[in-house]
Image (cartoon, rainbow, N blue to C red; front, side, top):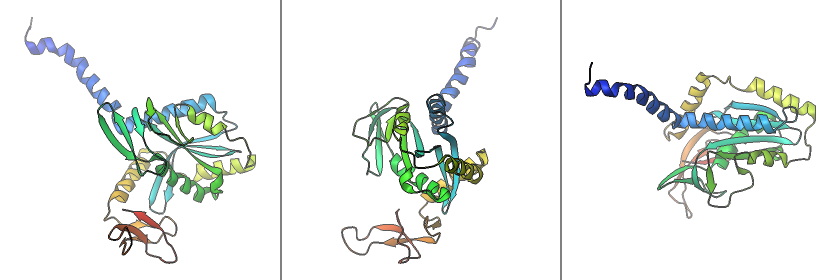
Length: 255
């Protein structure tokens, strides 16, 4: 019988290696994001009547500068609700108008984009696709995973099933049933197919948009965006993206 150290450790390694790989996979951003979105789907399935709230998940739409991916869209007579999911834990610090929020997990801190700003682009893409009044589109952020807000956040930034209560708080009809059906059909036919290829293309678009040397197009008129420099004032010397169709189009984006 073989009593070598390797032979004795073999049964342990047989279970330890797959377990380590599984834990690493579960901690990856993509898997955490998917699990968070899955939880929101389940919450909505249990708590929101399917006839009252028409649901679409993982909606990728074409935009002038590439694509945008929306976690969840709920269409109802009382409005269109665009839900962005954050699967995070720990303490969350952030204000409505801050560009970045902070996650504090034990002694470590991490910066991430203000999800309200992130969701704003989703709302604008839906507005353009559906031709809907922006007053009838509502941004909703839901944190799952055990977070604690350490600063005051707006009512549309929620935890767990809090997004359900926020959506239900809108009781005044603004659409007819026929309009809701028409918008659902428009999104079903206008969205990109929810495939791995679509996801990869969207990731590439995100990387390209984060590259300051990559070509960009104005989200309003489609003209090229150019890097410009502020010439006077308190922000003199700072650079920004400006529409090449200026002054007809005054779109500006930060670098």
